[in-house]
Image 1 (cartoon, rainbow, N blue to C red):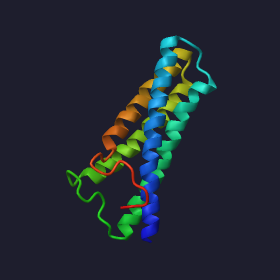
Image 2 (cartoon, rainbow, N blue to C red; image 1 turned 60 degrees about the vertical axis):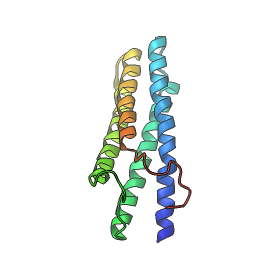
Image 3 (tube, rainbow, N blue to C red; image 1 turned 45 degrees about the vertical axis):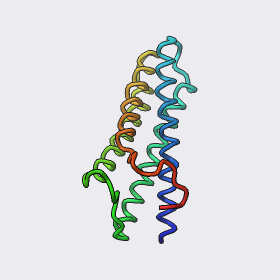
Length: 147
């Protein structure tokens, strides 16, 4: 069972970097598209959808980790700066996924190219900020199958 825990933890950790990269890509692409005043295309939607998808995957991996750790009586976030961090991490992760979903949805439904870019930039930016707050920065930045 410990190997399953290490696989989930490694995937959760590696996906964090995918999230950060796609989040920066989504915000930057949306802001550049808006400032250039160009038409919103399917190519402009890709970074927003990639960011949203990677966040959704992270939530699933995180919930699996949370459930697995609870079943095994493994302390969640041992050594955290405050005992409430596990709930902050969980809540902020869910909120970030909601914001990223809103970025995709609002950009798709907005009328006008500038409104689409604006919605994508706003909600992706909020999701990225929320992700940055949720990351346990005191932990190792990269984990490869090691606790």
